[in-house]
Length: 85
Image (cartoon, rainbow, N blue to C red):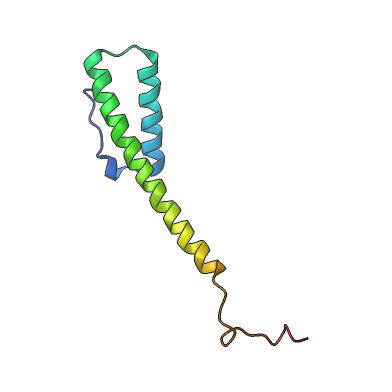
């Protein structure tokens, strides 16, 4: 793996995903030497771990936002003028 790789933290989600897909394709092709395969496999594992972490963070943010939407205000705060009609 002679080409320079950007640090994973600098990649966007899409860039990391694209790189991981490329690595999987190369590994599945069986055209790499053993050493290169091991290096790319290690990079792929690191990319996958980072992507899973990012997805988990995004999922947490969505759950927080959904919780904010679902939280009903107290009766003292809620405007019930339209409900009495």
